[in-house]
Length: 79
Image (cartoon, rainbow, N blue to C red; front, side, top):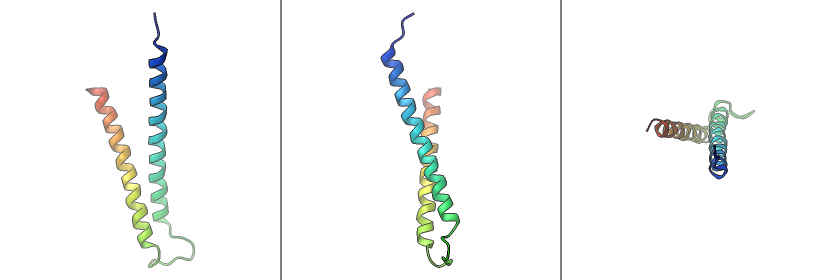
């Protein structure tokens, strides 16, 4: 039995980078939703609504990228 250590290391490196990237994107999405849900202390409903909309849109974009990456991974496994 012969193990190709370079290929094993390459798979490990790509898996590590992909995992960190997906967790980071999902975390950014959660942070974006939490910032849009709670206004800053002392802020009224009229202030910060544009910022909340941008945060929500960014969060949805992060979640969409996560969904796309997971879907692509499932496609690669099945194909």
